[in-house]
Length: 465
Image (cartoon, rainbow, N blue to C red; front, top):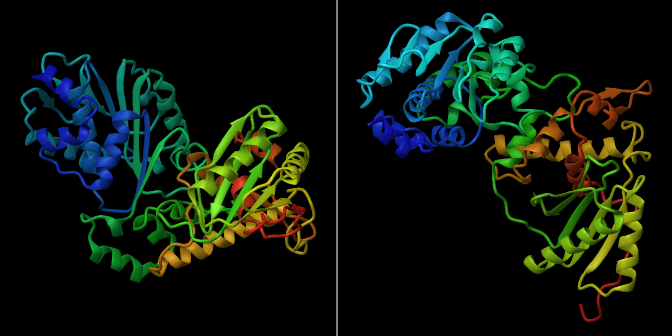
């Protein structure tokens, strides 16, 4: 029977939960289980009472039954959370399952009968790194409950153990800290992870009475409610320029591209490992970003023209295009190339080319150190208004692509106050020293939303338009 389970449910933990455990997962649980089957690292932040412990129990039993000779390590910051909550939940679902006669449950171990030494799950409290070391197997799963409370040295020991191609990590918890591996999995490292956020409001399992009690006691904008109800991290660190929730809300709802102007932000790479990024926008909708490495300015110019043609063909309402280029350094070559093309080639709509050097003087130089900071402040203001609309039950006004690199870049950049009281964004060189990528995608989106200043050149509308 085990061979059949492996064959049938190898990459389908949702069906395994329903058929074998009689566990009927909510939509978000289905999505997490599917991601776990197909990706090595999954991280879930949630409010209280949404069913994350049940999800973890299903993941453990599925992996034990659907991989040959697996090792599963379950951990949590406290013995009470690990043994009384997670381990007890595993026992509950195992006892009523079709596979209860194949797996033996004890207080510290669940193992395959007849193969106790190689085929098992174990409970190890996250109190010291050595508890997480010494496990090596082709098929291995670590489940970390209340992951925000697990110290970094222990998480680093876990990550160091997960070296195999079929090794997996599932982290779940209330997002209580704004630092650490769990926090970074939703911020600068989220490109590596499949991430999920689950609000208690959206879960049929969570007690709405308890939610309302928390809101009455602490206030809807308090960190307690953010963490325990909405699954949000506490308010951003003082030097983080863009809170994560502003960006994530803008990726969660579809909106229509309303408007007759196509805006294109172009961030031109200066170094070999950086990206040249093109960000198209109509109204409040930013479309999928186009990223390219190691492009000459001529190639970049061609990519921008290609983007113009693509969107004119797809969205017939467009009657003008505004292209904003970061033309500091090599970007000037793209500005010149676009001017030359539109100067000598007829085009079906009016095109405006706007140079927007990030290092130039800000329009509002009383508050912002340079143009780049001013542009980021503008998009932050747009996203703040978008969040306010969402919280009041109104339809969203901005949609960003659900692009993990973009989200990470927007939410990990810091800022400082200068001696003249101006806000200055963290330099790209300093971001790289912290191990972060250059924020090329975020810069392109900021350009797509930038104020319409300094029109450099525009072609004439075609005859008869």
